Amino acid sequence: MSFFAYKAEGQGQLPPFEPNTQLNNPALYRPSQQLTDAVNVALSLGQPLLLTGEPGTGKTQLAYHIAWFFQLGKPLVVNIQTTATANDLFYKYDALSHFQYTQNNKEVLSPDEIERRFVRYQGLGAAIQSDKRHVVLLDELDKAPRDLPNDVLAAIEDLEFQVPEIGKSFRTTAENRPIIVLTSNSEKNLPDPFLRRVVYYHIPFPDAEALLLILNSKVAGFQQAQLQPVVAHFEKIRSDRNLKLKKLPATAELIYWAMLLRKLQFDPALLAPGKRLSAQDRQTLQTSYSVLAKTREDLEALKDWEG
Image 1 (cartoon, rainbow, N blue to C red):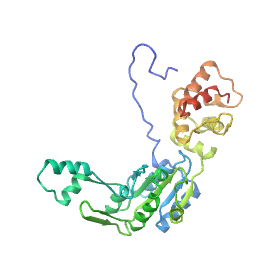
Image 2: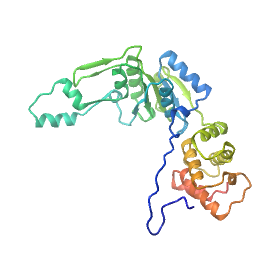
Image 3: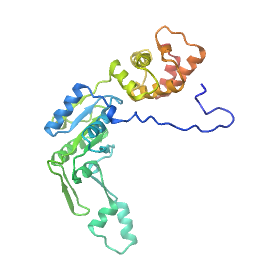
Image 4: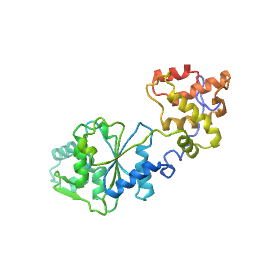
């Protein structure tokens, strides 16, 4: 495995890192026809699009693809936290810094100066203030407190907000209404009133054909036919109940795994059923599983696996 530069003994020279520019290229996103239909329904009705699906199915990437497709710049992203409030979707006010300023300075700041120094507009707030349309991504809504989804819905429907700290209010126009994408890894924390007023779509995990297309577009150095046993081996790992993996590898792990196999010069044909691996090839494959496994138990299970 001469690809690896780090050794257990001695010293070495750090190799240059060459990022894969295709990994997050929104132009390469390939939505299914059903997902495309859901996007068009949401756009037609002016409603938020709620996406569910297991991690790695492309929920977040869809927002970037929509923004790229309509040439709207990068999405404005709000990563929902467990302590989030409705105000966090619009702005953050640094009350502590403002207080410290008032304790150390006699000058009384104007509302505009307070805004400049201590107010930072977030996804929805920045979109409402803008004079053009944006895609707003509210990511991982299921992490939010129970009441937040309904607060989110009210905020989205009104598309206006106030900043009482500076005595200002903001409202967007119909022409500049943002395109709102919400993602959730589950449906457990989403109340019925909220679900009734969004366009909903569940993204299933990609099938073998879709996975092959994804790899072919994002992993250089392999022919499409060479990637077929990679996809088949990956699907076998996900479906083998004897493995009892705690966290199934997702599309992102598959892409990085294929990239690693390429860098290790591991022949994908060796992954075909019935192939006998040499001790060196077996060691290389086991090493590569560290990309697919995310827990100690899963990694040990994969290394002992006779797939």
